[in-house]
Image (cartoon, rainbow, N blue to C red; front, side, top):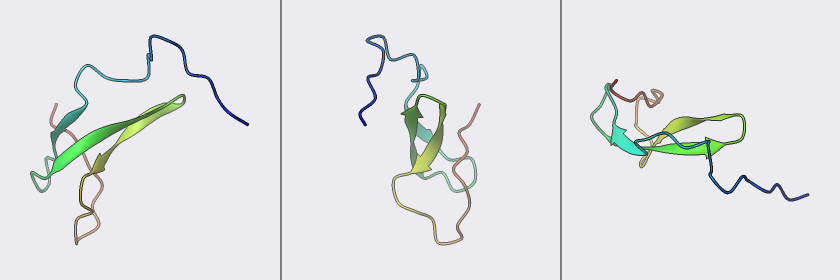
Length: 54
């Protein structure tokens, strides 16, 4: 089954890349219909979750 996303793609934030507050590594927003999440470009060794600076 394929999902058709709306043309406006309301699932994306105004800023799609940033720096993690824990390690200062590059993170990107992963958009999905239920919201989304921040993910590291390279997974950190300590396994912490990506968290964008407000």
